[in-house]
Structures are given as structure tokens and as C-alpha cells.
Length: 121
Image (tube, rainbow, N blue to C red; front, side):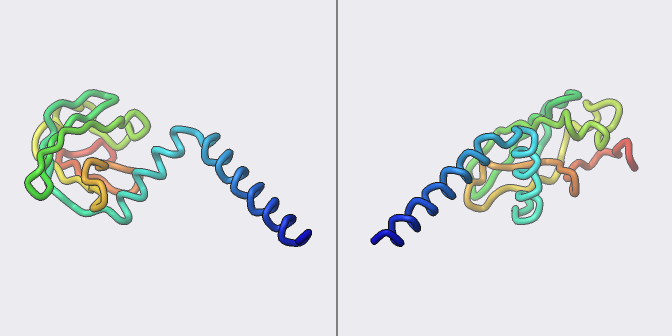
């Protein structure tokens, strides 16, 4: 019984430690992880960028007949964008989660669905 109790306490403390680590994660790191996960496992689709600024891209897309409107904070990816963000308005590619199509991206550190020439190109 003593051994089972010690094992239970160990498992519980490990769970608490994992939860605390996840809660303390930097929001920028969580967002980067989300983008990279969508890049690696997301499905490709077509989007229409409706508005663009130096920090945000606003776009719409359709998945299985459902229309979505979304935005992406691109302030940390600024070096991958053209000098005039308004040049991005128009068609683009996106990646979205097949489990949650509302979870989508237009650009990440390793991929870009933007069709306008980028600053890095």
C-alpha cells in the first residue's frame, strides 16, 4: 500500500509540474508552436486576404461549405513581408487544422502562403 501511495504522489506531482510548465509558457512561444504545428500537419486551402497592416493580416476562406473570417498577427514575422503590406491583399494559400478548420495560418517561420513578392525574395 505504501508503494502504491508513493507512486500516486509521484504521478500527481508530475502532472502538476507539467500543468505549471504549460501555463508559464511564453505566449509568443505558444503561438510559434501553433503556427509550426499547422504548417507540419495542416491541410492546404485557398484564402482571400481582405486587409493587411504591418502587424495583422485579415482573410477569409471556406472549408466544406463553411465560410471563415480570420486574422493572423504577423508582427513577429515582419521580415518575411513586403515593405507595403497592402500589396498582399488578394488571393493566398493557407493551412488549417482538419480537426478545427477555424485554426489557420497564412504564414509561419518555415512556410508562406502569400503570393505577393516578399522582402526576403
